[in-house]
Image 1 (cartoon, rainbow over the protein chains, first blue to last red):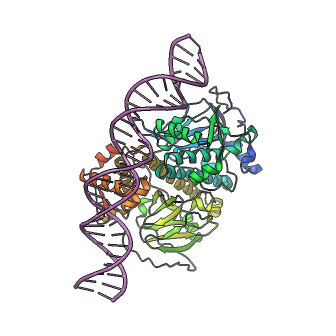
Image 2: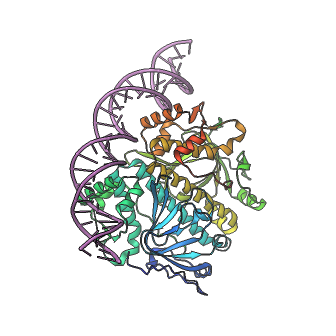
Image 3: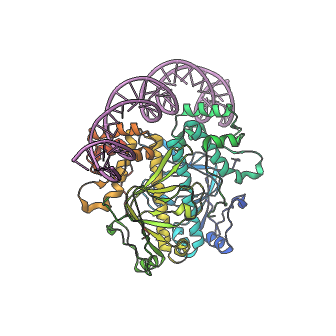
Length: 254
Length: 254
DNA sequence: CGGTAACTTGACATCTCTCAACAGTAGTGG
DNA sequence: CCACTACTGTTGAGAGATGTCAAGTTACCG
């Protein structure tokens, strides 16, 4: 993650603009009208620091956000502190749907890096559904896609060995992030600690470390200077048999 | 599950009707117009046998269904046969969204009991989004709610012990199913084998059996004659700290 | 230069898995 | 009516993967 201004500023100008995601070719475009409509719903940006909580774990009916910049994750914790990361959030992801719908057992959201989110008005969902069926469709697409990520994670945690799980996670993150950072040379930014990997895969920190080192010694990947590089994608794919690449660019609300 | 006619019949009359879910008070009602609109999209029912596959694992762009009757589950498998059940499907659940949206890595769907589903026309999603924002909203609600089930399952598999996971699963199923079977006396129908529990929680069959027996000996629950009864809900809740009950009745597309 | 967070590594404990055998039940066909 | 098969459930014994504890090391930051 490039360093980003992280002062806690909430822009709320007369015409609140959210500076768009850089690599917009990575996403399906909106129509003129959709863009205009979304502009009218924006409350402006909010900047967050690394480690900051965007949504507390048991909140209800909060705001809706699109992640413009930076990484985060969704999580749940048990009363004794055990934590499970549900999935990682990358630029373009839509945040807060479950809370908005007052679904019980909603998760928390925390940032991994300094980040900017675009805030949407409280009744945006209703407005989008009434007036912009195309955008509403995007929202379901995003929800269904996020669920598919959790599905994949559940498959890992439930049925893959530690090494397979970790390899699958690295590959999945690489695939999701790579299109966003095409212009930055090899690999992707990797602001995730071993503790995060542990919490995402239901492993202990120690075992995660040992397995990660083993994969690195075997030449599968390299993590250095906060970047992840996949060195032997073919071998990793053989090891983990992940599903094939996405055929179409992801949708978005921004 | 009561025995159900399970001949492979596809009704496709001039005015295809789907016999509604019995206990409709368990769901949020539709408006007159919404009901009329849904009627126009229905292709009729399809009856399935226990064990039958409704959606094969790597299919794309299939039909959409609402489960009227009977239970099923979503699943993924690895190439060597290891299987993970993602969540269980109960009457009222909406099926096939990920496939419809051509999201890679979609799951399969299989029935646990004889079941009836209501089939919807191929372009129903678009029609609903264009014309019935309220129903479109229901679809996102259903998608977000299903994701919250997977979230909870991931928390179990990742961070709970075998006993905690199993107890949490039993409670969650009980809570979901109980409103549907209020008129049947105690407990809920329980068409789930120990192998299914294993595959849902990432456990071995043997360990599942031993843990289940232990919980039963401890007086937490009872499974007999294909029904599940929770005997000591308070104790189980203490053991697993699941989230509080849903505040509102679930939505539906039917 | 001290202090904190992240990362490493070894030794040992334990939960869960695998293997193996058997019991109960339902369906099937002779 | 009885074998026969298939599926589900049950239990014990030993093996293996992963967790826990403990002790550093490295990197970063004020």
